[in-house]
Amino acid sequence: MTKVEFEKLTERYNAGKCTPEEIAFVEKWVDLNFGMDGDKLVFESEPEATITGEDMWLNIQDAAGISRRWARPWSREWFFWGMAASVALLLVAGLFLFGKDKKSPELTMTGLETHNTSVNRQRIILPDSSVVTLAKGAGIITSESYGERTRTVRLTGEAFFEIKRNPKKPFLVYSGDLVTEVLGTSFNVKPELEGKTIEVSVVTGKVSVYTSEKDRNQRRSGVIINPNQKVVYNTESKTIRQDIVENPKIVLPDAPELIFKFDEVPVETVLSTLRHAYGMEIVVNNSGLNDCKFTGNLNGFDLFKQLNYICDAIDAQYEVRGTTIFLTGNGCKDSG
Image 1 (cartoon, rainbow, N blue to C red):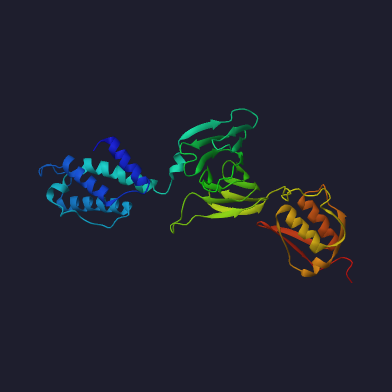
Image 2 (cartoon, helix red, strand yellow):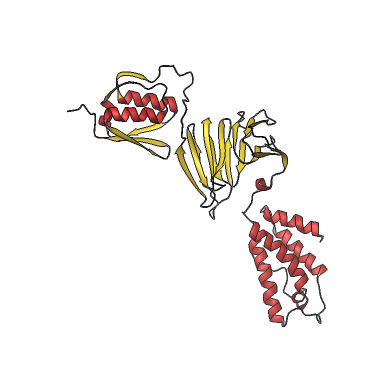
C-alpha cells in the first residue's frame, strides 16, 4: 500500500467509516509486504512478539469499533513482520484514536475564503443571496458544497448574519466548536475574552445553538434561542449559558408610537404589553402585583429602564434568570 493509500485509509478512520473489510485489507497488505524470515527476529522471544502483535491488532479493532476476530492463527511469520509493519499500523491507529471526535469534517472546511482586512465592516453576499457582515479582522469560509444539502460556513471573528429562509436547506455557522443552525433569521456571532467565550444573539427568527462535539452518550449540548436572547458558550468548560441581550429591541411588527404610554392601567396589562413588544417572558411571583395601577410614559426608554420605573411605582424588584424576567414584591405602595 502506498503512503497516499494509507492517508486515505486514515481519513476514513477519522470519518468513522472503518469497516471489517478494511481491517482485513490491512492485514493482507502487511502479510504481503512485511513478511520476514524466521531468522530475522525483531523481538527477543516469540511470546513477546505474540503479545505485541496481538495488542496492536486489538487496539486497531477497538478503534474501528468492530468485534475482535482473528482471520487465522498467528504463525511464526506473523510474529516477525515486526517493526516496519508496526510503524505503519500505529500511524493509522494513532491518528484514529487521537483524532476521533476531535474534529468534524466542517472543522477543516474547504471553499471560498474571505477576510476583512479593512477597518470598517465588510458586507459579503452568499450564493443564496444571504448577507454576512464581517467585523474588522473577521473571516469566513463558504463551503464548496454550499446549497447542496445545507448552507454551511465557517467563521473566525465576529459577524452579523441575515439569512434567506429555506426550510429545505438549513444554514449552519461553525465558530470554534460551536454550531449555530437557522432556517431564516438574523443573528450575531461574536467571540469574546480572547476566544474563551463565543456569544450568539438573535435579532429576528429562531436559532438552534449546539456544540459540534458529542459526549460519550452521543449527545450534544444545545439550546434554542429567540429574538432578544443570547447564548454564551465557554470554550474551556464546554458549557452553554442562556441570557437576555444587553439592549432588547422591539420585535412587534408595526408597533404604534405610543405603545408604552399608560394611564391608571393594571400592571398585568402593562407587563403584557412588554411581553408582546419584546417577545420576552415576564413572570410575576405575587399575583397581587398584577392588580396594582401604573401611570407613566415609558416611550423612549429601553426595556430595563422601563422595568425600573414600573417596579418603583409598585414597590417591586425584578431580576433576570436565564431568558426570563421575574418580578417580586409584596404589593403596591398605596395598598393599605
